[in-house]
Image 1 (tube, rainbow, N blue to C red):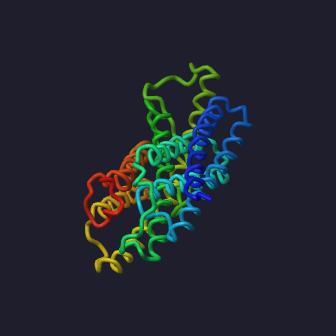
Image 2: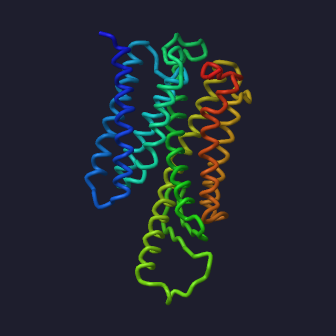
Image 3: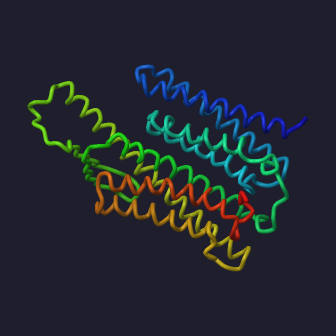
Length: 315
């Protein structure tokens, strides 16, 4: 039996299901009264997650190492991580918005991995000496899950900015370390208007938009609050592994430097929310910057072809 062919078929099925799921989630957002589409989207996401998980498991069994040794494997694992985090968050929050914004990203990633990378880059190869360690599973997998979580949280912040475009936002939050309580968003039109002159229908629309913004802002904060400790643990695990492999905890490698920048951006976001020093759109803008920084850290520096992480480079 050709296990590589089965693995490729599972990835192709996942790609097709992601495309179908994308359409279903967007239909569900457009026609919210059709709850069946939301349930179908969740079921298909579970199928996608299982297909990708089985493909990774086959690769692990056939090659004898955890499948995170090159760019192709990490992209597939990131897609699996995105769908896993998506399903957990959707189950906890009952929000279809997560699927509507996450599935397009997962589809793009798996399309890039399958269509853009050469066949040679998709093939499994013997591990380089630096990767022959039990730290491979702990460090890289935690970093990938943290990226997936932070990407989803940042996408919600971008959505928050899009919906609140042209409006003046001010949020007041009483919070614990990584939870949110007593979230109050004061939503004002830039052009002052007399409330007595607004029709009841317009008031209802504004109230619905305010509630939506409150929900998105709250969810984004909690998701980023979950991803940040994972990122911290991943960086610490990487430093310990680096000392074991190269004799130094920190070498200012491009990957390490951008991981630190990513950590600082999201640390600043959480600090601004906890201390209330920034409110409204400003933290959302910072989280949106974090979305770009995550992609630079994960994929952008791969185009440089330099550093101690050169086993993952494109060039």
